[in-house]
Image (cartoon, rainbow, N blue to C red; front, side, top):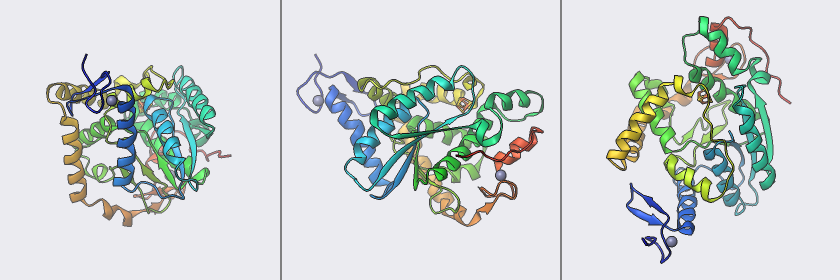
Length: 316
Ligand code: SF4
Ligand SMILES: [Zn+2]
Ligand SMILES: [Zn+2]
């Protein structure tokens, strides 16, 4: 029997990048402490924040919901609300929305769902279908651009002061490498664990799981018996992210800790690139009046580029 590195109990998990073994209790404690430490390090919250958690119904966002709910109890003046964006992906998103709903009810957290259809007039399935003949982007690019705007609209609609997302270390490192491969310097400057703070029209976005590998979050969700959606999005394999994920997983298996190294290196690069300069470049989209760095926002641009009619968001 191998022992936990922190107590005398039997170990059930080995973390290769740190060389430490964990029993159940010490493992759960390590994950929750990691999140607390990340929140403190990046000063993600203040005691009076009204925090909207973006809950997709997957393991990351539901684990985040659970952990923030626990942390929030120590801050009686703060509030938690959950928001889910239903992109309109048939045979996929409805199950995830149900898991999100169940978990929010169990934790007594208000839960609001907003759909692409209500916000933009189209499901992602409609957009992907139209893009087959006229589009230039991948399904995930359309989805990502619209979801980012949808989350900001939703967070403003529930009067949130912060928007917390479940991006883990793997998500962050994949995005960093993708931006590098595309040579997208502007996007690299828009990355980070705390985003859009003090930029007019945006709710500040924070990523409390950014120092946790996906595998670690999945094991936490398993130990906590959190029910989450395990099937993958039908569009996932069309994305560059899937190739980058496989590449990074291959490297990590051979060189434990390489994802952390990449994350830390990119944080230094992002600082050198001057994230702060973006604060001065926010305009209002001339079409939808939402914030943008150009004249019109990316979401209005992609809908127009597909020859679709722009619609006003239906927010209740
Ligand atoms: S895999 Fe792509 S299309 Fe599917 S939910 Fe994620 S970003 Fe959207
Ligand atoms: Zn232990
Ligand atoms: Zn716009």
